Length: 174
Image (tube, rainbow, N blue to C red; front, side):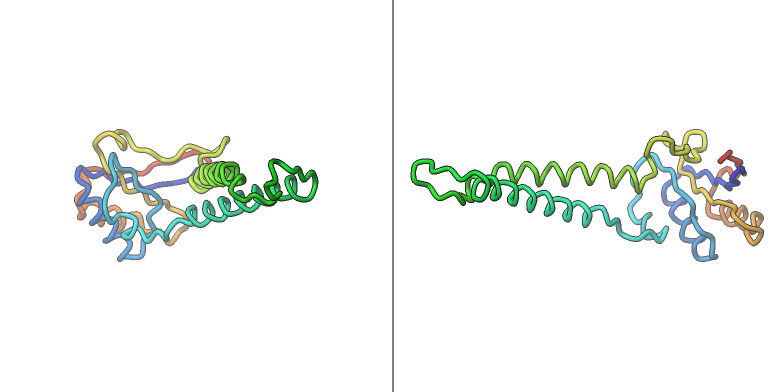
């Protein structure tokens, strides 16, 4: 089933930002924005919530730290205690390098996996809607036409009033 989109192209970031604010103010939901560089304030204007990737990364790092310390403690104290130069079996300072490495490994792999998953960049994902020149010198605001209540004429009018130099409808196979 094909998906229908309305794509407005803008020459300046300020016009695209104003269009996003105006469209959201009129009740339209922004599907995506394509920009050649980061635009300050765009995420707030789109109504995006903060990412949970830092929390997931911190939890994975703590889990890696706990598992490294538990494994080393089990091996050195419970399973095969060795008397090396009269040092106690639970020599926590000796556990620090491996605990650090496993913390970084678990946190890094989880952050990369969470990013790919939340960005829908996993294998087999469908390509996004990108208008011609969207990542070179043009800013695009993409609206998805999901239901019969979507007023394409009003959306087109608002995009043009906000400074779009072109507004076109696109159909993408799902």
